[in-house]
Image 1 (cartoon, protein in one colour):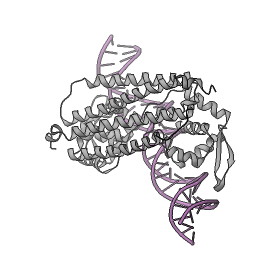
Image 2: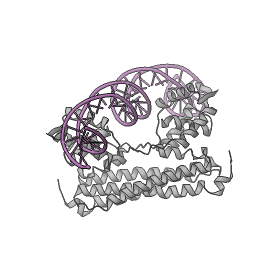
Image 3: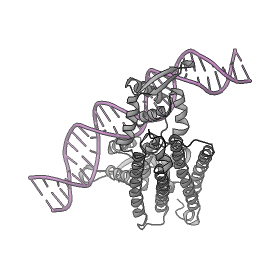
Image 4: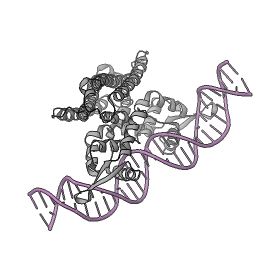
Length: 179
Length: 179
DNA sequence: GCACACATGTAAGTTGTTACATGATTAC
DNA sequence: GTAATCATGTAACAACTTACATGTGTGC
């Protein structure tokens, strides 16, 4: 139930409306745990019913501001400290690399180049965020650590994509097995 | 429907039984698209019904060997060439890094050290596989490319974890906000 | 004979996606 | 006024997890 704890953690940072949580998921959390509004709103209702969050304000356009309760804060700490992370990762993009041999060499190269263009864009965005000034409290530092993790991962992927593209464009790849 | 195409791709490599596919998912494909037997067997039945695979052999212990049909081979190629990869990635482990500030510094460091130990083990396994001799046909090369992608990703993560651990153990982290 | 790995399946429940649906405020 | 963004919800469906369930060959 990671979504539940993602919401609790985001509300432990500060109270937010459902819509603000949605935007937070689209921006920061999108690379760790994507979630859509049709998942978030019902989950907020369940968290509220369970007493882990409470609606502490009502704003314009029927927006509802939620805050974590002491129970909710205890629950997110329990989750972080006492449960093992689920280290499984599903990546459609990674899966496709196992099947590169099924494509014509030129087609394989084009696919990998599209990947490279996409992840370059992501890296640009991460680096744009990275230069923004922040505080040196633990929250700000945590965010910078998470961002550095994202950057390191994307940089590694880009370096690997360069190698992979070179390989599928190499004579040794193109020459053999013309299908 | 990545599972469907993961199965088609694995069967395009060579005919396999359901059980062999299961083992293949536990080993190679586990880091890209984990799947359990309760998902694989029903999906094989559906693929067969759709005419994308066919049962080409029956072995001991009621094992069934499946092969891709021409339609199945066309479908995996269509998927690889004509559909965009879903680049979203869900990672419980990555999500948790956003909430490091909620833990006591020592607890945060212990969690990150557990991550480091886990990924070191994965890297050891990848490197053990990497030194095994293989061919230089496209299939073998593709597998090596995928493996190198995995290794690059894990190495980047380990380097980042070293930095992250140093940061949460630094005086600047430990000193402030004693909760 | 018994344990273990092989081999396949179903069922209940949870989680996630896509589509449908509606209303409120702001900017032009 | 009208388009865009804000703001929240539900419903149908697909995908995934966990548990239940059963039978087969091999090695000791």
